[in-house]
Length: 335
Image (tube, rainbow, N blue to C red; front, side, top):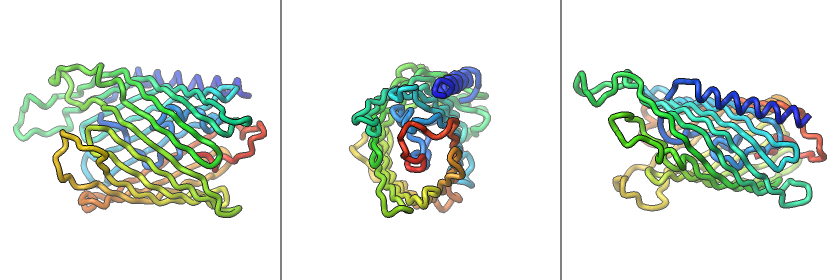
């Protein structure tokens, strides 16, 4: 069974990389997904194989509904473990569009999952992801102050850049914590000729995540989660979330997001207003192999008066049968 699972995973990874090489698409910085908690692979390569199942998830996000050129993002990922569960493999493909900017990336991820106890329920994983990022800008979606502005491209500009990401992820049955860094190489491969490509080159982002699973009684579990993101070039952000699991079937949660400045940044003007948002997240386990999630964000800053909020939909599918190795932990308890 596990040999078939490994073959499926390798086929998915190979297909995803071929998609990246064959698709002509194009970009901004790291895509923001509210439902990162249900798939940590989007921000941390060390998460690969955490679920110890062959798991595929697709997520679509439409941000700031009603604003022209508002961000629209799509991501699909797949991950699983090899036979001994000490090695996790995963693939993440992300497509992001903000106005005229285009961004497409694909990363193959490897994680070594070091067991810290006899049954492997407590692990420390070290991960690396390597792949390509394609950044671009569509000049047909830009309007200059003066017609015929030579600085505005007449068509699509794009370039492909090798990139890498790294991470560490600790987990047991009741707690997890992770640190990761993304976009670590792209800037070194980008062309220095600014007239060649106007799209912004991905800059390093740093993430810290942590959360816990707290039993309330047999039917209800509480899951508080924190995410801190820092990219050194712009204000960082802090996400605080709390989820309630009801009867091993339904997750409901609330979150609050705020921009934070961990240290002064010379490229930012002083007194910038904070960008705050809040919202709700729901995830349903429709069956032992199928989960679907929805989240709604509403901006609490001045931007909230000009849009109808942000919507995000995710669908996750387990491609193998429930683990049959003596580990009775249900999938709904996974971080």
